Length: 639
Image 1: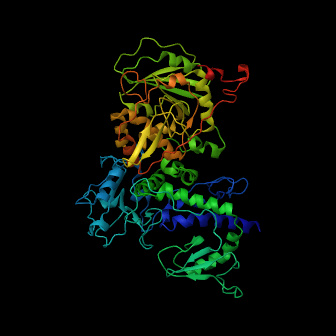
Image 2: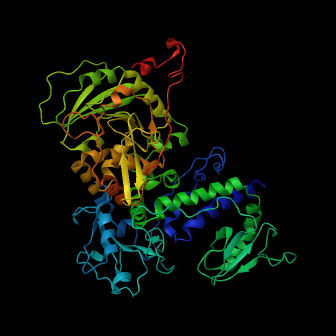
Image 3: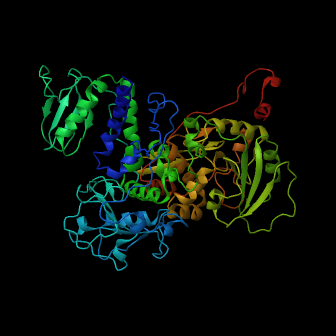
């Protein structure tokens, strides 16, 4: 009985993941959702899923999750990672990719694909310094077969990328080159070496991508519970009234599953299983597992959790051409550096491996969005990073206010000013370090090695905060370490008259951004800002400094899919607070960003990630008519 329960739990987990990945031709990308093959003698572990309460760990007591070992050698003689791929070229700067320029005219779509790769953190313009040489096959677009590059070298350390099946036979031997191809054939695919891509329609979004199209999250009454694909394109279905073995010839008393019409679309069923090229073997497999009986016992809550997982996989890895390409490169990078680069949890839990950079850490506990899932809390100290831009003065009062916080671990002054440094600074109980900036606004979000804490309090030299405001905001951030917590807010909106996004800094009940002139966030977002955002967006922030707040809020919202959090701020300081640094002189009113700032950033992201909120968190008894001595943050009420 225990063995049956274990097999049933495994099948339930696999069926939900197969629903999305196999339909898209997952092959080697199946590692995104499937338990890895255990090493000989190692205990079997199962992945952690989206909803920990509904999807408990499938491992037995005492078992620890294990990640997959290095990929096995591909089929075809002596070709393996040692012979076919020189990993020594990747050990310095990680996976650096050189893209061969197109040899002829290309479509606008392929031009944008090349630009997307060149704007990624993987790209290098030097073929000599590249770990991987990428050839983008244009066969499907031009109708002509791609030619062999001059530096082919038998395909060693090469990747041939085909987003669409090639309409012509191969004109050169692939040799030692990896192939990332849409819907590859079984006889040509080399497991553990090649990468199988989903078949992408011509209209598939280049970047961003639409959310999953799942409308009904729980089983609908009257529809089939299970549909099984047959060899020639038909589907056999069974509903909740069928017996436990409808595909078994001996179950003659059962009326049997229904037969849907052949076609391109999936049948209307709660679960659709694609079993491969041998329907008789798949049928015996289903009989052995009694899969229908297991599905019949599944609660609507668990069906919902499984469907949520498929939507996460779609959004994280398959919803745009750019994500498919970047996922391919991440898979190759994991092969090069081993399973420690991305543990299974990072692949299978939001926001996913593309947004959990292994260059920052390989431990989930170091990322802001896994603290709650891991049952941990960030450390109880923060680093204050004060940006002094032109024509700024030393923020002496601000330093004293921040230094008074019991949670402050260090103060960093980022001096991005032409003026010489002051001869002396205020005496503080914690270290004060001055960093010489490069006179760019994007310097504020560089991952400086001197930052020793998880939490960063980002400040502008002209900001004005009290110690109580700092203390309370940090306590709030500790409960929401993946989000931004700030004092001043702004909002985006859709402008029907101009057919684009608008922006307002007016104080309203609703907001979607907090200003980084005074805000708490996790230091990991400095790594994402510097190494994940396209260079064009960072250049935009430097050329239009008022855009930097918008860009940072876009980034955090795209990762967390959550709005920021507002905390109380002295009314008398709101009137004079600047929106963003970079312009000379004090500003009595907030300065809006450049006219096309929000629209330019939204276009680069491919969608609008910002979410609006009306939530403001206040201290207990804040502004209540009780004794002042009973209030912890008494100074917040002072005028």
